[in-house]
Image (tube, rainbow, N blue to C red; front, side, top):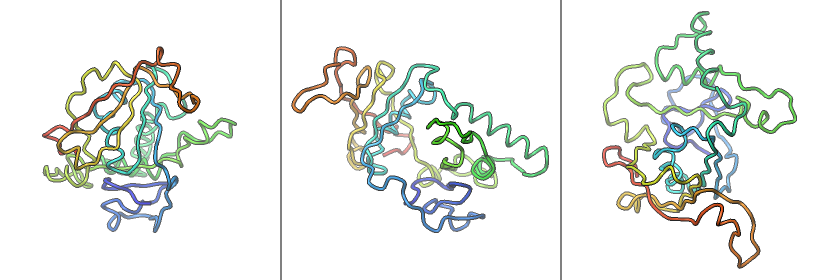
Length: 244
């Protein structure tokens, strides 16, 4: 497996193959990296209800273009606000505290976004597996994380970049407004190719709520009165942001 899009990427403190700065990136490197789920065709994402992070046009755009980017369909379910809590919460605070501790002690110089991203990838230690019989702690411990760095506005030395880097270093998720975006909590990305999306946008199906029952062959879900009917739409990459 190889990273797509990112300028720099790490797993377990080592640089991942495929990132654009792989040859120049200092430190330990993965010579090869076996994909965790090489035959994955359809991924399901369950997010908490933080509107700014997960229920916005960029998140829906990412869901809808997943097939075009990596060949995997994506279904995206959004929980209510303050729901779906676990050890991954407050990771931003852990990152800030860890950075501050190393800077104050003189163990690191962190004065730009790249240095902070690399610090997170190599030095961060929380959340950790606390030995609980709980999959949340086992699966979300920090050594399971993949750290991806996208250059935006500055290079790895903190110097300003020109606009051209947006086309080759970043997975650009800027999108036009999605009508009635907040009315649905269940989004299913389609199988739109990048070539089709460049003219027509990326397709999706959505409903008020999601359901994962298994109706008998030939029958439909009996909970449609609760979830609402699936409707179809598309999300278009914004003309000023590159996109598909």
